[in-house]
Length: 279
Image 1: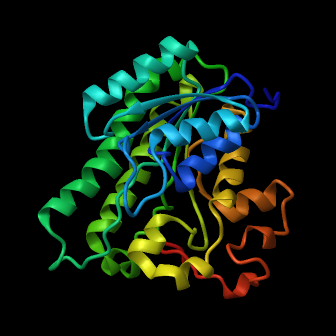
Image 2: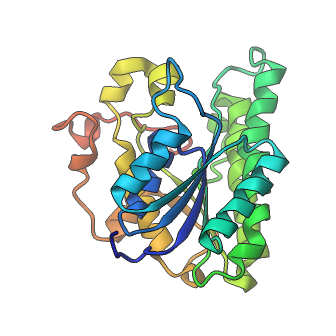
């Protein structure tokens, strides 16, 4: 087992069967971290690679310990079970990563009530309920972090009007995180958001946003994972309430050459597709 700064740290991640969540799980596992993955995908999906069990195998292969929990972040009983099993298996929780998220860029006249509710339930309520359930255990951690994969509160007419329902859900996710940062700073619990400047090559980009062409103009999930790792290794008492940008976090850490993160090697930074919510 590896022995890095996060060795022995226990990380609870919502989602994580694939994409960015799995990349973060594997990154902390390289240090020898313990990772609980709370995700719905127990069986292979025809359009989505991986399950919570294959993700757990990948965490172990990377050098960590893994505990897969089949559950839905919308279900309070599943959240409580994931927290209880994590504490029982790993003797605490040091980090919560709010990765689970639903995207629907439909306009207000087109988005269904079911999809609107799904985005609110997963993105906003899920972030709040999972973070809240872990708070008693985070309070006992030597370096407690909550990290939500959501954008800065750039509530301009441009972004509110682009896709109102999705914007509300992602901004709500950030507001939960920033509220917790202020509310629990006296306990030394850091809560920050993290968002990329470019699209990331994930299933959402491929299946919802732009297909193979946009995948080629994106960066790999590893850039998100490396930035998250920098944030989670920092002292919680040094920085909380931050609305962090992936590329800025890496540059501040001395990683200035980001060319290796391009999904297609050799793609210049200027050709990569910008993500939403950032001007």
